[in-house]
Length: 187
Image (tube, rainbow, N blue to C red; front, side, top):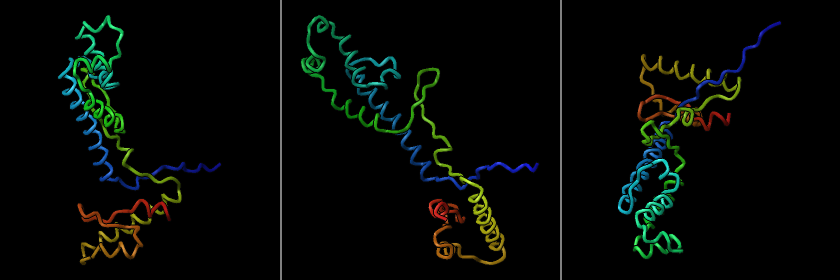
């Protein structure tokens, strides 16, 4: 009985722009949380940042109620209580909306401090089958051959974008030929 090799995905490439976007989005989310914390401190203490991040406005409102004991026995809504205290949490509510719409995931360390991380698999692309592996190997061999030839003669890599019908492109940051993932999957 002959054993067949199992399919092993190969890396097509990494999208550095996507990585930068994901990193910025993640940093923006923690910045929003810090901005919300600073705004909430105007009205009430923020002792549990994780609970605060779950519902920013509700956490702040609850702590405002705790600080203002005179309103506890009264049967009025929290919105009316905030109105009587002349506290406007609309800015905090807007921050909460932006925070919740941000798709970055927030993690918490042992000290209860937030941090984010961008997972490599979010911006790295892989082949999906053996046929794509074969095509990737052919293209990589071509790029390697061009790099070797470039050490002998001057090559204008930009022209290979046209010759390959957009399958290859020149990464202007590094000056290297790379595979256009959208065109590769269309092959």
